[in-house]
Amino acid sequence: WLGVGLYNGQAEMTQPVSAFLQLFTWEEIRSHNGRGQSREQWLVIDRKVYDVSRFSKRHPGGSRVISHYAGQDATDAFVAFHNDKTLVKKYLKSLLIGELAPDQPSFESNKKKSLLEDFRELRCTIEKMGLLRPNYVFFFLIFLHFVVLDAASWLTVWYFGISFVPFLAGMIQMGWFQHDLGHCSVFRKPKWNRLLQIVVINVLKGLPASWWNHLHNQHHAKPNCFRKDPDLNMHPLLFSLGKPLSVEVIRCSLWVLLAVGAVWHLNPSGPV
Image (cartoon, rainbow, N blue to C red; front, side):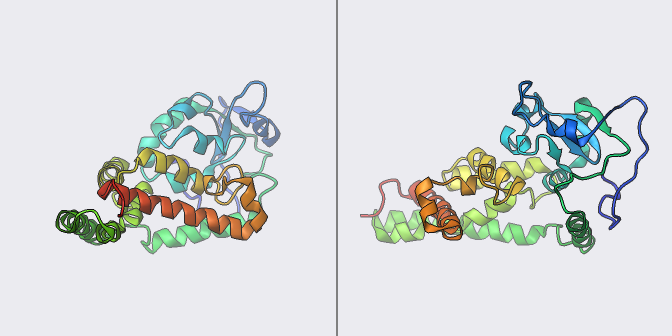
């Protein structure tokens, strides 16, 4: 992958300039943020410049999550979001339009160099320690345990009927497991994560996986950034509570909605 040696703790990467690629400055790249007259969207990954204007609509992670980095450096987000680099490289080749000029830094001027270096060194250390490698036994037991709970919930509805008891029984912890699947953290191949996520959140919880992924991918692409993080796209009246409290209110509301979705799937008539 293009990013080999990216997280080796060095201050900056140096790569030979390809003679056939067009050279760009950060000023040119920032002007292609999707908001100008041309509506073009460029982004930088490991000093290479890619035009994702048309591809953004076909992006498996959603058009918004990729457009949030239009006109910016997306190297760290690209590494974090894509486990299967071999698969992604096939798409990158057709989108490549140039690279940063030799006199241009590898990161934007509004980003703190030391903070980027610390983050990349930390990620490199975490990967070497194996903390990102999934434990299949652990996730299998998690899946097995909430399948048993789901079956128990149906038996509760069958035995007790529609009442407050099956309502409580429906409050099962599938949310965290489908969350890990949505992050492609359980299996190495993204497709297996997606398939099992559909089983967990679509079939067992009764909520659409595409809806959750669309919002959650944006959240991790631009965490806690107003107008870009859907978790913070709240009603203006909530700001009267103050920013810290309003943020917590909206996050709690999202988890309540997920819990209600699971309960509604098991007991559509609701508690009596």
